[in-house]
Length: 288
Image (cartoon, rainbow, N blue to C red; front, side, top):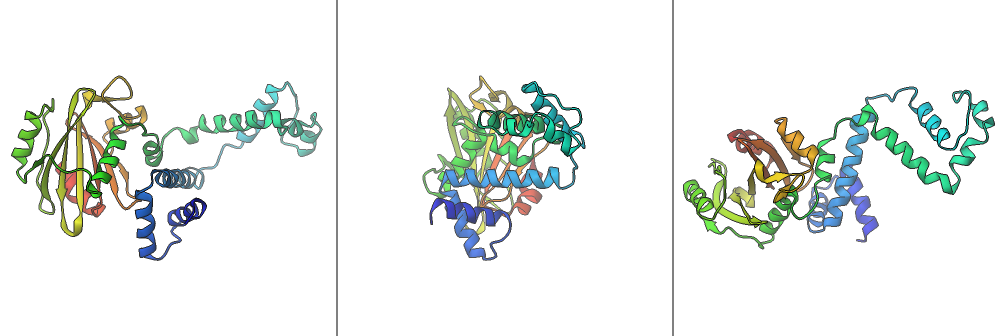
């Protein structure tokens, strides 16, 4: 299947038009193995979510179109007396002929986008948009996703293999993790062990749990002091950090793996799993 066909399939998946569970699972597996397809999925999902949540129930101000045209005309020193009347608009120096000439088309489009983004409709970022903003090899969210994929593909294994929470915590401390870690135990999942990574000379803690039917829970926990938008070993976008500081949990549940990102006890936690998200909500997250 070529790229255009895959993109159409992704659109159908997002729109709920794929009725075959087997076909959905095969498409999700293909996306999980291709970063460009994951990006395409996030772009389409974010766009649909934004349109549905912001424009389906919110009416744009009646003077928005008028303001856009007026500001565009000011760029070219063109005056019109009444842009609400179609006939007058056509008589005002053929303004649309000017705007849509090649040399003005791109600036005009940029202006429209800028005006919409600066309007109250875009005052808050959706969870999908926050996720899409995370990028770079030192981004905590990106690292969590990549580490989970490596676990599924057998490319990453635990360094300390133990079902004892105390032993795993001890391993983190002795390996140089510079903050106190939390290693809870659960009824539904068994602790497989821990891993310590290093970025810019700092050590960070990871742990893995296993459940029934090959379910995997991967947890990445980092002290807040080591994460920011700049000049720190790890980073997250400013908007996402503010989102987490408000006590919110960022969730991405529209893939074969689910992601959760939250703040607790002066640490950021990133959980990536292929487990039932409701089970995660009711049991795993409840322990934090």
